Image 1 (cartoon, rainbow, N blue to C red):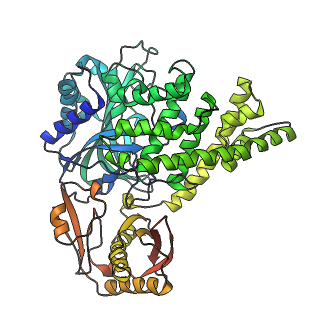
Image 2 (image 1 turned 90 degrees about the vertical axis):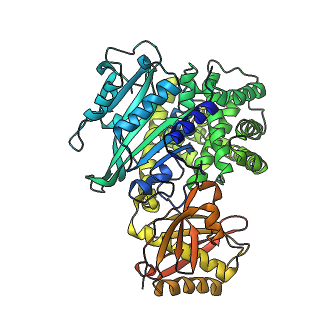
Image 3 (image 1 turned 180 degrees about the horizontal axis):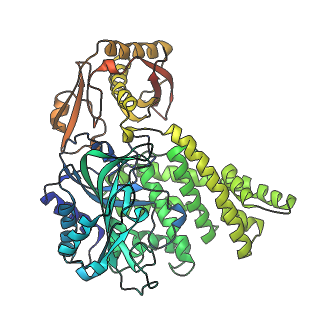
Length: 591
């Protein structure tokens, strides 16, 4: 019987629940209280603070299926395996089991639950370097399970090491590969070559180190296991397909694209259809999770995806209108049983997509004459020109080349290389500025972040007391320099209201109220009066943080033990953050 995605996910979650793992909820693509990333990009992303020592309310063994969005492989979209949006299965040990148990779990699931022939499985382990030893232990465990030495590969850090970021939890990993039976790409063909013979199916990370800013490794408070199995790629492997777009996860959408454009999924159309399907699926899920296309942060990423999708659709047929909305309806239909919030937000999704398509049409109307004029006035066009037009007008480089009449493949290749150079320099500058802007977050557990996280609870309660109980948290973002807090309220706050909120916060801090944490069910937490506004992200058990008798909220933590550690808080500014929502920035007083 063919294993479909829904079957794979059920088998995986059931398997680990029987192994005493607790199920985590499938949460929003937008990280909560973590400014270190724009989107949830892996199943373990919401768990970073727990790797660093924070206790999880559900215990030490966890499992989940998590929706994720990554953009680092965006230029690879259009091939048979890369995706911007995907689902990730994962199981975790927070200071509980270690290598022998998790490798045993992996082997049992692959060979017993999925019936994969052991002769089709190869594995890789960390080869070791000056900072960390060769992982002989994992290799011996694999041998004891029946994987011969000839199919165990020791690879360097670029292949078999996983880290949360430049700093933070990290460690060696062991990866499992499925042999497709394709001809070897050379004498030294091995897993990780990306030639199509060996496809990665699972990854077990032994998260035992914390990388410090100076690059040195220190041991974490406890050793952790972090695993990941991509749903789309694994389903394709199990179905004997070398193209993720040929599985039931995309077949409805591809059929819709073929019908609208009158083009088959074959030949040169394949790459165009893959880009359109991938980018629109990612954008649809992001919009449903609250992202509005724009010019900064998450909004910029989604706008870029949508404009590439629109341009791709125009390459297929310039006369088609409202393509995004038509295709999004199919995506919603295909996923609404597993993700009911898509159907609930359907009208908003379709409206946002239609608006974005109309805006890009205006952009093209303005940009195309400027390209034509530019080409006419300049004898030579460079890759930097392509980049500048994309930055200024949102014109994709392929469209620029088409309008400019640059059709020679050699000329196109040269310009694209120059474009990538300009884009790379831009990324370096962006990372530098973003590094300052997004430094910290709960991912780094810094003391200033912990202080401001606790202050956010005080701010929330102070707003409710000054403005009324209709105030509810709508989001937050915390760095070591400041906290940003979004909340529901219909109008701009007055100077008197802001000063009253600030005074109320600092009054509690001056009292040095104790901060207490309790673990209980969500139902009991709500009965006890704890605020809880993001119900979908909570598991069977939750942490409830009480600050004296002033504030009580469901939250993952971490927090200071007493308020005196925070120091005086100053509200920096207040502004709109959307219809019916306001935003406050606050930080440490400079007094």
